[in-house]
Image 1 (cartoon, one colour):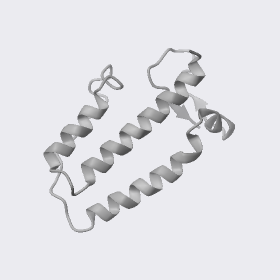
Image 2 (spheres, one colour):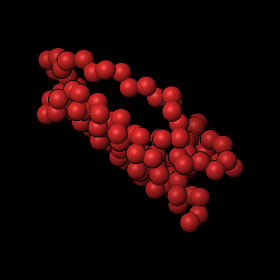
Image 3 (spheres, helix red, strand yellow):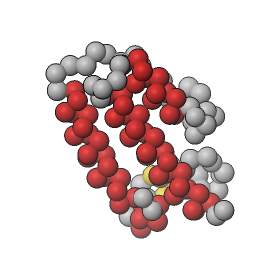
Image 4 (cartoon, one colour):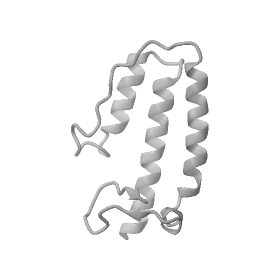
Length: 112
Protein backbone atom coordinates (compact mmCIF):
# COMPACT_ATOMS: atom_id res chain seq x y z
CA UNK A 1 0.00 0.00 0.00
CA UNK A 2 1.37 3.43 -0.85
CA UNK A 3 2.09 5.79 2.05
CA UNK A 4 -0.22 8.42 0.60
CA UNK A 5 -3.29 6.16 0.34
CA UNK A 6 -2.57 4.91 3.84
CA UNK A 7 -2.39 8.51 5.10
CA UNK A 8 -5.80 9.36 3.70
CA UNK A 9 -7.40 6.27 5.23
CA UNK A 10 -5.72 6.90 8.60
CA UNK A 11 -6.83 10.53 8.66
CA UNK A 12 -10.42 9.54 7.93
CA UNK A 13 -10.37 6.97 10.74
CA UNK A 14 -8.77 9.42 13.16
CA UNK A 15 -11.40 12.10 12.48
CA UNK A 16 -14.25 9.61 12.76
CA UNK A 17 -12.89 8.32 16.07
CA UNK A 18 -12.39 11.83 17.41
CA UNK A 19 -15.90 12.94 16.43
CA UNK A 20 -17.51 9.80 17.81
CA UNK A 21 -15.66 10.19 21.10
CA UNK A 22 -16.54 13.89 21.32
CA UNK A 23 -20.21 13.32 20.54
CA UNK A 24 -20.49 10.49 23.02
CA UNK A 25 -18.60 12.35 25.72
CA UNK A 26 -20.75 15.46 25.38
CA UNK A 27 -24.12 13.85 24.73
CA UNK A 28 -26.71 13.62 27.42
CA UNK A 29 -27.61 10.10 26.38
CA UNK A 30 -24.77 8.36 28.19
CA UNK A 31 -23.48 8.56 31.71
CA UNK A 32 -20.36 10.74 31.95
CA UNK A 33 -18.20 7.86 33.21
CA UNK A 34 -19.32 5.66 30.31
CA UNK A 35 -18.62 8.47 27.85
CA UNK A 36 -15.14 9.00 29.26
CA UNK A 37 -14.39 5.27 29.07
CA UNK A 38 -15.62 5.11 25.48
CA UNK A 39 -13.54 8.12 24.46
CA UNK A 40 -10.39 6.71 26.00
CA UNK A 41 -11.16 3.31 24.50
CA UNK A 42 -11.61 4.83 21.03
CA UNK A 43 -8.24 6.53 21.25
CA UNK A 44 -6.38 3.60 22.74
CA UNK A 45 -7.65 0.90 20.38
CA UNK A 46 -4.26 0.80 18.73
CA UNK A 47 -4.34 4.09 16.87
CA UNK A 48 -2.83 6.01 19.79
CA UNK A 49 -1.53 3.13 21.91
CA UNK A 50 2.05 3.95 20.97
CA UNK A 51 1.73 7.45 22.43
CA UNK A 52 1.12 7.10 26.19
CA UNK A 53 1.02 10.49 27.82
CA UNK A 54 0.35 12.24 24.50
CA UNK A 55 -3.16 13.05 25.66
CA UNK A 56 -4.68 13.10 29.10
CA UNK A 57 -8.43 12.75 29.46
CA UNK A 58 -9.77 14.71 32.39
CA UNK A 59 -12.76 13.66 34.45
CA UNK A 60 -16.01 14.90 32.94
CA UNK A 61 -17.98 17.47 34.82
CA UNK A 62 -21.75 17.15 35.20
CA UNK A 63 -23.69 18.37 32.16
CA UNK A 64 -24.89 21.95 32.38
CA UNK A 65 -27.78 23.61 30.58
CA UNK A 66 -26.93 24.13 26.93
CA UNK A 67 -24.01 21.66 26.85
CA UNK A 68 -25.74 19.30 24.44
CA UNK A 69 -26.61 22.15 22.05
CA UNK A 70 -23.02 23.43 22.18
CA UNK A 71 -21.69 19.94 21.49
CA UNK A 72 -24.10 19.41 18.59
CA UNK A 73 -23.09 22.77 17.08
CA UNK A 74 -19.42 21.92 17.51
CA UNK A 75 -19.85 18.58 15.73
CA UNK A 76 -21.65 20.29 12.83
CA UNK A 77 -18.83 22.86 12.49
CA UNK A 78 -16.11 20.20 12.80
CA UNK A 79 -17.71 18.00 10.13
CA UNK A 80 -18.05 20.98 7.79
CA UNK A 81 -14.43 21.98 8.34
CA UNK A 82 -13.15 18.43 7.76
CA UNK A 83 -15.37 17.56 4.80
CA UNK A 84 -13.04 18.97 2.13
CA UNK A 85 -10.14 16.94 3.51
CA UNK A 86 -11.54 13.42 3.18
CA UNK A 87 -8.92 13.13 0.46
CA UNK A 88 -5.52 14.18 1.83
CA UNK A 89 -4.60 15.57 -1.61
CA UNK A 90 -7.01 18.45 -0.97
CA UNK A 91 -4.96 19.40 2.11
CA UNK A 92 -1.81 19.32 0.00
CA UNK A 93 -3.42 21.51 -2.68
CA UNK A 94 -4.53 23.97 0.02
CA UNK A 95 -0.93 24.43 1.09
CA UNK A 96 -0.75 22.00 4.00
CA UNK A 97 2.36 19.86 4.25
CA UNK A 98 2.82 16.43 5.77
CA UNK A 99 4.80 16.82 8.99
CA UNK A 100 7.90 14.58 8.85
CA UNK A 101 6.84 12.84 5.62
CA UNK A 102 9.97 10.68 5.46
CA UNK A 103 9.43 9.19 8.92
CA UNK A 104 7.11 6.15 8.92
CA UNK A 105 4.16 6.99 11.18
CA UNK A 106 0.89 5.36 12.11
CA UNK A 107 -0.90 8.70 11.77
CA UNK A 108 0.39 11.60 9.72
CA UNK A 109 -0.18 15.22 10.70
CA UNK A 110 -0.45 18.16 8.37
CA UNK A 111 0.90 21.65 9.04
CA UNK A 112 0.65 24.96 7.24
